[in-house]
Length: 315
Image (cartoon, rainbow, N blue to C red; front, side, top):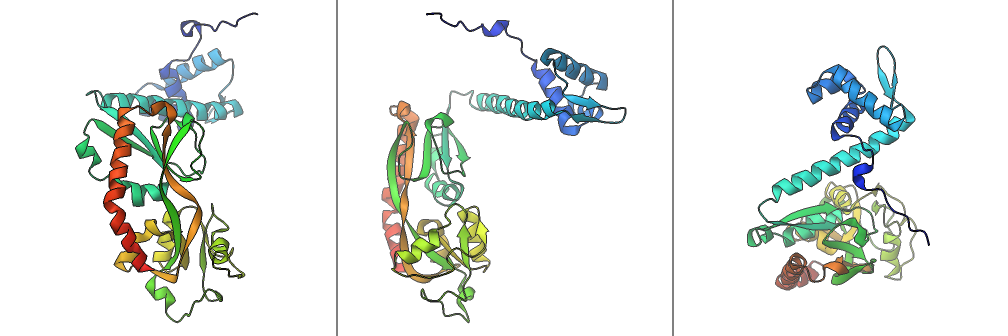
């Protein structure tokens, strides 16, 4: 059997970082002159770097006219790739420089609204307790996740099954219908008649309102109608501004319900199909930093358990 032998890195031809920076800056400005000003180089130096890059690639990256430049199709594609590469180099360099004191980076990922409304309060005081663990928190809007995303711990909503991950259930999701107190004035909303109500919709959960009423054995029309938003955060903001009634997880609107900024339109909480989980790659099961965050979150859940139970009084 013939074994393919990869060519050593040193013998491959790669463009220099300077050439890539010159190309990216020129592509962004669509001007060698402006690129030269930003790079603190001469226009001819920028042009030469780009020309050498094109020669190495054996491709034209720019269309050149006497008065302007524009990207070729290949140039547009390459620009996006180079931009991503340069951002990665910048991020890697910044991370290394910021952690040169033997500290570690704890990389977390979470859905945006859950991150701001639950995870941030849960992590309050963590950095003071563990000064050598620098938090790096990424917000993930999509519903899918895998171990290939280079994180230590993920806080996700779903069924708890993600490839190559160990998942620990945090809590079930119960959603409530909330609105601004003034929104109910001059209305008599009931679950059998929502004609006078605007149901705020979440794009990622188009059947949420239908499920909310179905769990109460109520058949009602118009559950798919209403303004549509991408995140719970925006949906909650719309409810606070009086746009209509939002169906959101109880835990994410606890402060507003406790303060009276929002009220429940109907005294019912629907159970979601999924739950919230804390997940980590199987390969990091014995990692010290992963064990630390797992213990911290577990302690937070125990500490706040009573206050979470008190939320039942709101209903």
